[in-house]
Structure formats: structure tokens, C-alpha cells
Image (cartoon, rainbow, N blue to C red; front, side, top):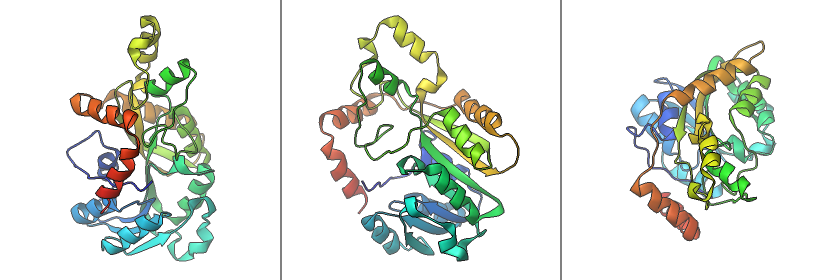
Length: 275
């Protein structure tokens, strides 16, 4: 699916806004999985960043090339990406953005290891990843269900799933230290069909005792480092749970209803927004 996003920089419960905030003014950026180029467009306009895009989708590549945002847009299947094929970009980027990208890959750790070769020695990644330990997925499993959808944590295009510990470990294995983290939040029922009212009260209370049950996406900055990084990475990620404002309310309920009752509408909405 082609993703298009209208970015409101005042909305701090938007992963794109958190990613934007972590990028320094005037950075040279590689936007991996740039989709329709929405985040790079804001970075170019507001922070005078120079952007190179990577995207696999044919339509996304064409849209990005027409928008006059990127110095270059590369059409790449990341599952086959080798940094050696792009030697002109070795050690050349200040920031590599992976916004909701790694979960779509067969071997995200291997891709990270290749992508980091394109960073300058003092460069860093900014990353967003959905949290499979959200309450909505826990509820589904209690009813013996794993319901893929058109978007969200169980987006049907997701190949890999993460929570805080597995994120911390993957980045540690790649020699990357998580230096700063935030998160977006989602009401406990998310975009899944079951409601908390279907659970025994004590089970619902147990699920919500974990702050991670509220996290939709982890958003963080990661840079080169050495040593045993797993516990440090986890500590920084979990520190992100102390803040954040959830996006509940009437509009969320409408969106959830439409996604569950009329999932095919999402495709048409995304197509319209990308034009």
C-alpha cells in the first residue's frame, strides 16, 4: 500500500513529527522508504535539509520524483540492498530516516547493518517502529486471534514484529546506541475488533498495568557505539513511556469503526491523499 501523510508539526502524537524533531537543521538525509515524500518535504522546507529518497513502490517513486523535494530518488528493494552497490553514498549522510520501514523487511537487522555504512562517523538513525506489545494485540491473543488489517500494528504488509526488548537487542547487535526516544500512544483497543469490556475486569487491569500496553510506536535516535548496549538501549526506550498524550476521543472512534467495517476504504483514501 502507498502511504501518504499530512503532517501537522503541532501534533506530538504523530511519529513523523517526532522524527522531524530529532533531525538537525541543514542535515544531509537519506529517507528510507520515503513513500510519497511527505516527511522529507517538511524537512526540506522547515529545516533546509538536503534529501535523498529510497522507495520500492513504483507509484511512490514517480510521485517523489515529480515533487522536486529530493536530490535523487532511488527505487530499491531493501531486502536485496547492499551498500557496496551505492559506493558514492558511503559515509555521506548525517541522518538516515527509517520511519515505519524495518517491520516490512525480511531481515531488518541485516538491512540496518548495510545502511549504517552510509552514515558519516558522527551520523545517526532516526527510526519509528510499531509496538506489538500494545494492549490491542494482547486482547486479540486472549481470544485466539491475530487479525491483520489495512494499517496499524498488525498492518498486513508487516513481516516482523517488535517490542521494546527486541528493538533494544537488534540495535545493540548492529553496534547502535539508542540515544534519545519518544513514543506515540494509541487507545487500548487500537484498530482490533475486541473490546476491553469483553475481558474479565482483573485481566483488563493486568494488561493495563504495563505502560507498554499504551504504546503504538517507539520513535528514537540511534548512533554508533561500542560495548554491551542492550540494557542501555532498553532503558532509554522505556524512559519514553513517561510522557505522551493519547489520541482517543470521538474522531478516533470513527476511524476505528471505518477500518473495521469498511477496510477497503483505506486503499482509496490513501490513493486520494497521495495525489
